[in-house]
Length: 316
Image 1 (cartoon, helix red, strand yellow):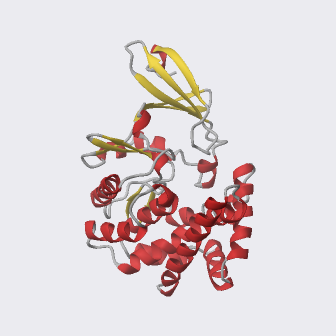
Image 2 (spheres, helix red, strand yellow):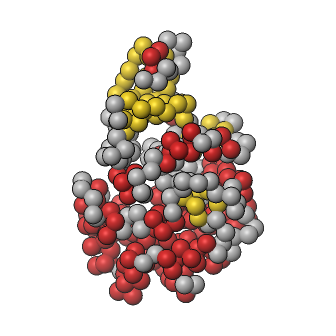
Image 3 (cartoon, rainbow, N blue to C red):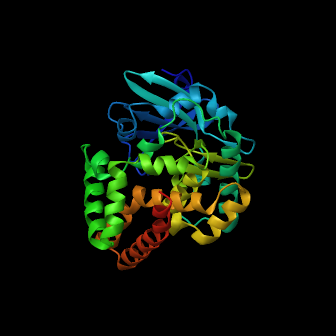
């Protein structure tokens, strides 16, 4: 057991966390009053680990010191990682309400902080991505019918249903192109790499970050990937659109202003990758969500992504 956890005097199980990996979370208090969050995960049963080559990537990045190389103002939450009877036990800072989650909308200023931190990280690791990252081809197909659908559990079943609805909602030419890239992502990966590669968080949603007064913290590095900077932006936009104040177009413009080397072609290709990643979820919400307003918004989101993904196909 971690020496830190030997000092625990109070435990509270967290049943309402947003993760889908199957991990168990608890909030603990140490004998000196320090509050921490502890994650218990079985690598053999973790869907993310299973789909990305069996690598406990977050633990690898922490133990190798990569996360300590993040630029000033950007941090991580990990305090300690240990094994306990085959379970990976990750001890983290308790960031509490600093994690926006799905409870509120990110302001323009907060989005600016997030993009600025992303660009700083991309620059720090440009052309020098650390070992052990998720391969770009794997990240592009992570949520495809073939890959996710091959796994047991409720989430893979939802992913398959979502892709079925996607095929019903969009123009066949877009549907065929997306499924072809799922089956063979090498063409898209090659085109994306023309924008240069770096360390990507590759899962940056409001549930995976914390906004402290003097620090931005990125949480859950399990999908950290070697890829082009624009892909991190696309993933942030695809998962956060309903929870941000500025428009997607304004964030794209701002990101390009912060990173002057990102081209329009880089953005187009990244938005195409975003469609491969989460179109199933938008299609599922557009057709099955219990709230009509959410269905309408999800349908509009899906159409936006389909429209903006088309130029990416021209770069392949």
